[in-house]
Length: 396
Image (cartoon, rainbow, N blue to C red; front, side, top):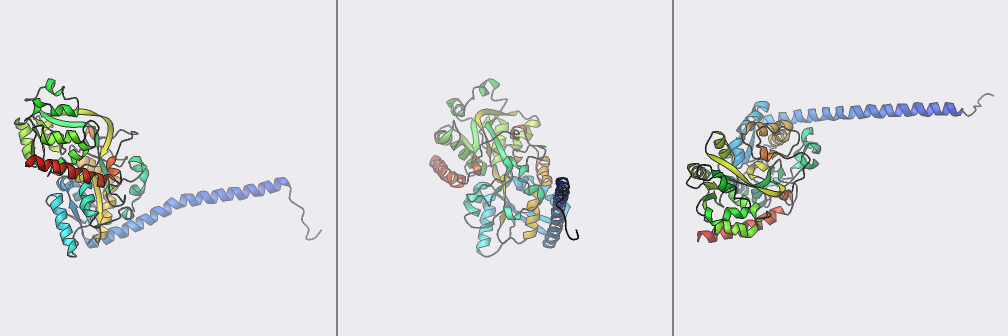
């Protein structure tokens, strides 16, 4: 009958649904395959535009603390060679650099783009002065945005707002480490140092040197010790005032005293790269360790974190440097160009290179990371104030 259709058979209906399903799945698969390619093309376009804009600015200015200003030259040179953009790095100590930068900013003069400065100075000076911008919005590189490549599958920050002070490395604390002169201290005597309290034994009085509290590594170690099980406030107080320890803020002097045997033990106060180099050359010094009960990650000095200044004079160069530095390429250079590196990148996909054995995180192991606690800045500042009171009382 004209214009009349019978209902299709169940088999015909099934074939129609099957065909539609296949077409839908095929279309979805094509879209899924096309999406990464589209994203990759978008990124390449954005990256090329960023590089071009950064080249017009010509330079990135970095306020650097001790470790980056001393050890990152090859990294800065690699960035310059790759992109043709110069790197200007501040000279002098971290505190003096930041004092100058903040004084300039008060007059409306903005000279710095990036800070490679300790988490302590970030928290105590840069964040409170509102000198920084949120860091994560700067990140565009796929290798940096992929959080699965970072320890714990996330980004780590050292400020109370969890957005300004981006951690890119961490030190591993698996014990309390000290150095001794093997010609002045026997292995038998070292074997008696089994707990932090053993370093305070009267037999070591007048034989120990340590970094003064004016040295960033010195105060940092005491802040850590204040919060470490088996040490605490009483240990710190006795170490500073009652153990006969000789202090100096000059690292070369401490090194000379240890190597020459005038003071045969150097207490655990950080900045040990030079000592490891000397030990490898056959100088009679050796590292001792008092094992810790729990593994901990630590923000170690100025080589721990990166932040970005507000009103940066070279914003595109700053963005390019931050993304490249935190990429696999940049962080691999960090591991391979610095001898006896005493921290390791928080990226999980870079070879350890020259990172010393005890600073290599164990895959799959969870560590206590107090510096990444949003409350750590205020807590550490309070502890630091208490330590400085003890320090000043010693000098009176």
